[in-house]
Length: 324
Image 1: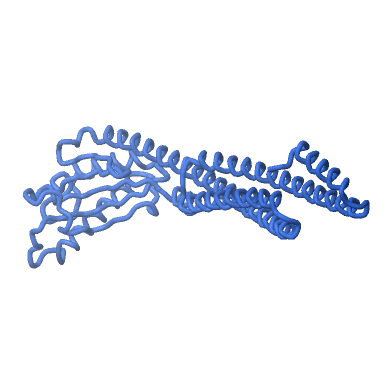
Image 2: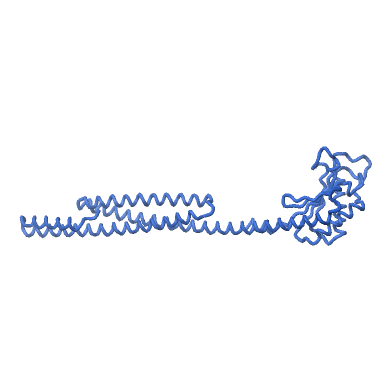
């Protein structure tokens, strides 16, 4: 609390009254001590006002940091830790302010020796406060950097979502085109489904192969050729042809060693027809045999004997976005 002009006037009057009773030399010494004390009080007041102004500026800056932090759309672990650190810094500064005010009050009430000690402590507290300010500035810079990283991450996420939506729309249109091309075969051992971002064209063996054979008959060749023509212009499409068998073992003396061998040969036969009847790039086509190990209906062996043509979008560009 600062001394008022009234209290200063009273002190001066007391000094005047006191001088009426003492020699002139003692009066001059008393007057000099009073002026010195007044100067110290004025200096203490100035430093206290500077401290209060600095604290007000710190509080305003901390309030701005908290406002900016609250506007973040996502609280990552690092940003949450930074916010808690900033809150602790604010608490320390607030406690330091209380300490400064307490010492200021003691300064007004103490004697000259105590005043000198308090002034030294006050200066140390001021320097400590400046260091706290530097810490808050560093924290604000760190938070700004995290905000930038978060904005970049959200921009990439938006781009990735747009790419995925575009791929999904393209695959949906392709599925409709494939279904339209194979309309005459659906319900006759052929189905077209879209799931997990891929298109599955499943053809039962009764539509493609004679029993125990890997040679495609005329009806099956027609279906495969129509499929090839429907997808031949898709440049960003990977084509996997999988052969599947039932659990019946290959008879001794047959042209195929086992169901693995038979499933691979049937898949290869379908791949050859896909290429013969279209402009499909062989690099985009893979033939695979799955044998008897991925049945679709354990109670119906005829459904397990099938060829599945799996159409998948090329995701290289999406992988690049994820890795960036």
